[in-house]
Length: 469
Ligand code: ARG
Image: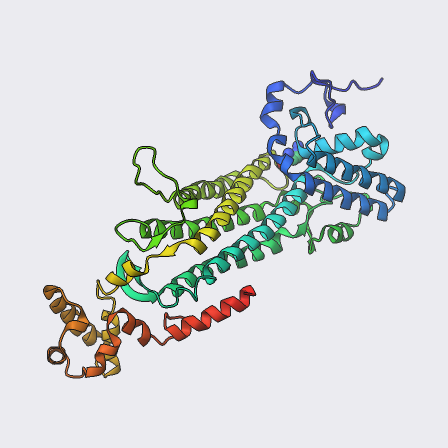
């Protein structure tokens, strides 16, 4: 007696055949399909299949001729997909089944050999790893572009002093390039974090088969070599269900989004009438439909706003994986949309951030006209006293009194006459004025990593060298 193949209304047989006597419920089919988003993995799926088939031919599970046919047809299918001539249907559930079904349609029994010693669990894990690896490489380029945008304006802005804030209160003066490079540092950590994640992504899972491995004589080291994976997963149970790398990648994206969001927040404030530090390029702003004068910082607002979904995606993935038993569970299908979305969102944000960072104009006069408000040089005066032998706590108190005296008269510290200063601290000499006001305070800086002009210049040189600029 031959088994009756279950077929749905469209007559498409499922890959599982045999044991089923009932066709899949249409509602279940719609509920469980992933082709509507995992079509994005077609390139990775085909690359994985070609590498797998090549290995199968190495070990004699398919002939060299069969491998040649499989490879040729998979490449043709890839071209068809790219040309938009490939038909997707929810009946074929996911990208793996679409491509395999087409191969079988073209090659018959030879096509039916491709799935030897392989499961879809293998395929989805391999495809996802390949995709994340490519996404990491793209993000590294985008992060470098953004760093170049910041470094590219350092020389031009070298003479600009801006207030450094803590608690959003004016704190100490810093060179504008010191601020630009502070973001380069954050994005460098993001990049290094991605490269570190890449090591754990770049592991071959293919060959774990369903979860226990296979009794067929496959050579996983070969498959790894063909796909450029640095390592081979050592334990089939573990590697088939491992999605740590997905969560890690989602975190790395969330961290980039958070850095971008903080920057966007600052520049939104900077572009206000109240701050008036910066003029944003109009190409990245929009107007208001009711207020004719408005030029709104929408790009920055959306970079900040879209951080919410990127953080949400990380949360979704953590909750998705919580409490899952070992090896593959269908739940894991839900991991694709969050990382696709996080990647799309963060890469689009980075693509906009770079030209925006490069092109925004500093309102030099407006910044300079108010740079000496807020006693940004108070710490500089305190350190002057420390150098003159006054203990830090006492120096802090003395300068506090001087600031208060200046405040009540609405003057700067540098406007207090020398003899009056000496009444507070006899150690003060006429050279004190060299250390006051924003530029005096900046010039007085010395420490490594500080905003001292010499240190900042060194860092600019170092960054240019690192970025090959
Ligand atoms: N579409 C599935 C996913 O994204 C991969 C297929 C594995 N499915 C299965 N029933 N074993 O996770």
